[in-house]
Length: 117
Length: 108
Image (cartoon, rainbow over all chains, first blue to last red; front, top):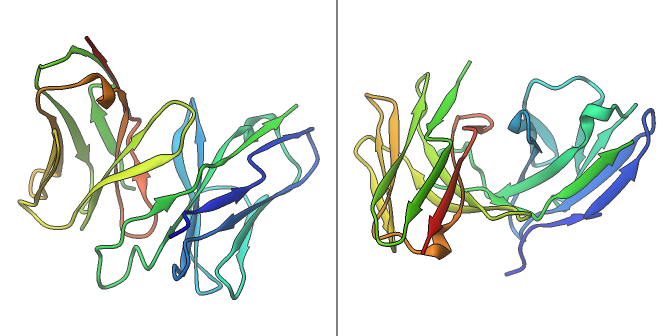
């Protein structure tokens, strides 16, 4: 079974630009979550999409947005980039991590390393 | 707001020794996760603990959960160099809250 894929793997942008990151979940998984990892703040939850709907959201400004398509692929967009947005962005897929079964772990992709200059 | 604290944050140990990483969380969480991250790599799922008293073991790693104490432990038995990595615990019911990670170095 193919794992979670993320594209691109590396990005360099300048302040004020916007960026779109893509995540393809494991086949059959309907949930995609996004996380930001930085040395200072660690791993922080951005949002989760389930069946094309944003189901949960972390504490990030509105410049961070996302969407999920009918094939469960997800994109994350960051507008008006700031230096502090430089980070590793990880997506994770699962059948339903917060559902009744409760046994579903999240499988993480390799991440997109974003550098904002 | 859920807070997750791990300790220690850094741990250097010798091969063959045993050690425990602790993970405390501040509010009720019905599940607790442990992940491993190697330098420059993504997160690898180790354990999902769902109920009080849950214990799971994989090789030299054993994780347990005490929901009353809001405490999970990751115990390493007879450590080997290949277990060197950063270990994260995470909790939450609508988005994971991660601890800061324990950077583990196992020296021959």
